[in-house]
Length: 134
Image 1 (cartoon, rainbow, N blue to C red):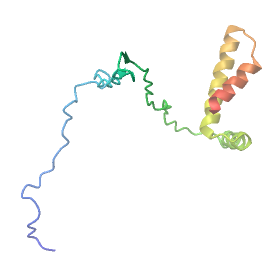
Image 2: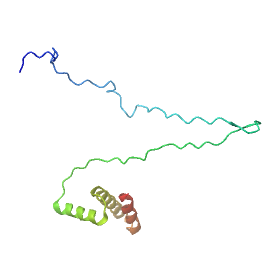
Image 3: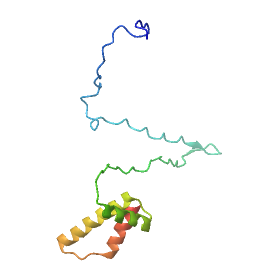
Image 4: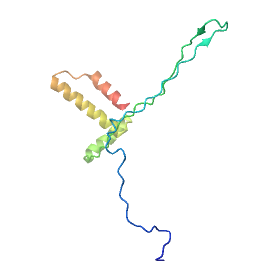
């Protein structure tokens, strides 16, 4: 190896990270730029040229579907609990995530019903099951 390396810079000191210029600004407080509204349509002349006729203009806003915010949940479960999850996934064709979410919603509903002394509704359980799988 050569000890004389011409391509290396003379100053080999390490550079530390530079702070962001917006480090002190909370991103929630920053206003997003306003989306420009569609320009109104110009009035159209009638064939006779008597009076301008304004036709309604349909503007379809292009919206993205709302994203479902997910949180990583690394948890250890017993082998028999994992087997139940796998069997349930095989039976209903849903993912482990969908089955866990459904179970949590059902437990929450049942606890609420028990706390209020209300009867458990099979229709409500089916609605929770259907909504959680979509």
